[in-house]
Image (cartoon, rainbow, N blue to C red; front, side, top):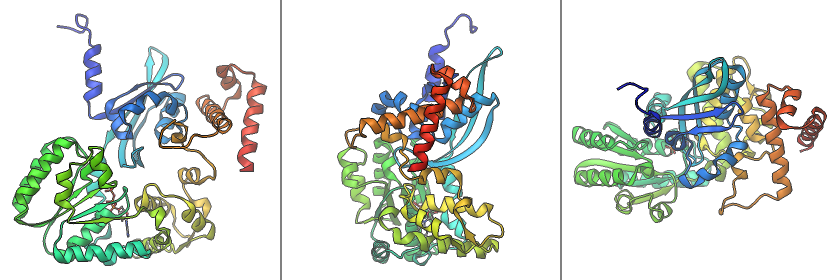
Length: 436
Ligand SMILES: Nc1ncnc2c1ncn2[C@@H]1O[C@H](COP(=O)(O)OP(=O)(O)OP(=O)(O)O)[C@@H](O)[C@H]1O
């Protein structure tokens, strides 16, 4: 049977919904026309939020969107771009993206982005153990805040008594590092196996089962069990319970309050009971800001030792910025930022504001609203209408200017307004931005 005899559209639709690659396509005006299930998973959207997608889309100025827009403007592909970010659910995600222009004959009709989710792979490569090139102990952790000191004291007790531990905390707060330190305190000579629960394939759990049988002794750390689908959580429970009487030590982590996770059916209650002989809550970095600057100091001193750099400190301005920022990706976000900064620094001893990457500057600009602020959600306060419309206008006009490569005449034409009117509004936006 050939392509002319059968309508392939349902097959393409099925493939789009089931393929393990995120797909996002926009038309020539920058409007989303295709956004598949994997892309929703990568970006952390719940199904019910999809109706708001077009609204959110309007205000999106993140990297994905701008790569697609860049491709649309230039007509040339942008390939193999790796990015790590925190999605709407606060999960750390790493993707490798290819963005292509789409032509019909000679005419550019849109752009498409294919995102490969390499989060798990990245996790395996980016293991703190490998980075530090030494076993992680409690002494490797930055712990200046009272809350972090308390966490370490409790973790030491758990390790000494070999109590299963459930680490609770947002992505990037250092749960994996703590698990490593618990393992070292318990029995550093034994192996440690990490199960990254980022996936939906039941073979993950079968492999863990085999691994436990092979290891016999050592520590099993199941990272973010709340991200596993319930069926896999049940399978994991069966495996860990079967091995409970053996010699393995079990540690796990979740990204949110376990009581809430259980009541929203995200976490299987018995799995929680299995791991939670001791529950240790790791506070987000924004609630223990005393750890920020000491972490930076520790990072710089490791960096000096490892690569012989001369980097020593942050300027006062950068310190203030670091202390006022909320760090949604916690220490991992701070660490990635320092990785980025130090990769560019050669002879400077002090990091000044001009050396900060553009994306970080954007995030720390005072008063800047995030795309999410525009969604109407029951758990958030509404923006005053005036402010909403002002910001909406600003986003929309800037996006239009972006799309037309800064050409006011073309952008004004597309927006159905005069050149003068657009120029006046752009000037107003600039003036407002300067006065904030
Ligand atoms: N207290 C700390 N001291 C030193 N480094 C830290 C500390 N906490 C976190 N880090 C650094 O931050 C990075 C992220 O930590 P980690 O991977 O342990 O977070 P996590 O809570 O396990 O995140 P996720 O929930 O996404 O798995 C690590 O690479 C580590 O180097």
